[in-house]
Image: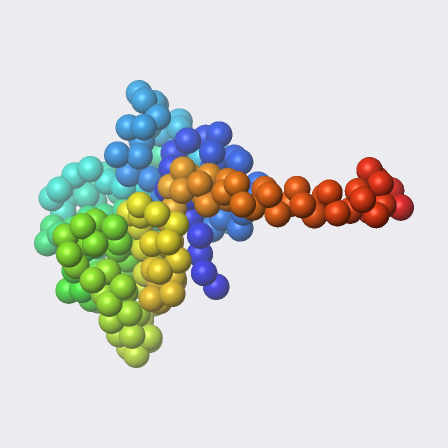
Length: 226
């Protein structure tokens, strides 16, 4: 099943889209949190958990760059939020070291800042849960993101590895559908792209035309009123 996640920390947007769509989880990072202004970090994340409930995944990124710092921050996040949180760890040398240590302790991990296939393979070998591949940023660097997804998915399936490809960093909805078509297990989408995708005037025109046709044959009553 394709997993759709929301890439935002905006409480109003999360509340809205969790109600509307089959949202699998919420992802965040410092850049996303910055859009919400000066927030109380843990209280804000607790509010997100209250909105999405225990059945959806919450992905929270560490800031430390060294393995020991990453491990310490991960422990703090798990203690102050809950043990269901997926810790987002950048796919660096120190990051992989921390991933291996945390995996042995049963911590759920999302390997992030993935631009290259070798990063993806290494993250999978660390038994992470998700591999967050930065789709649009790869495109901007003239890296074939779709080929990378296909290659990574092929190896994951062949080796029967448990990691899932979570494509991220999108500029357009077309990019999200291309990533899914290429083999991503899921995508994490900014709320603004969802607004654009489902706010197309042509969609409303079609709905309005249906309503006009109905009124012309049945009058201004609903099917429930017949």
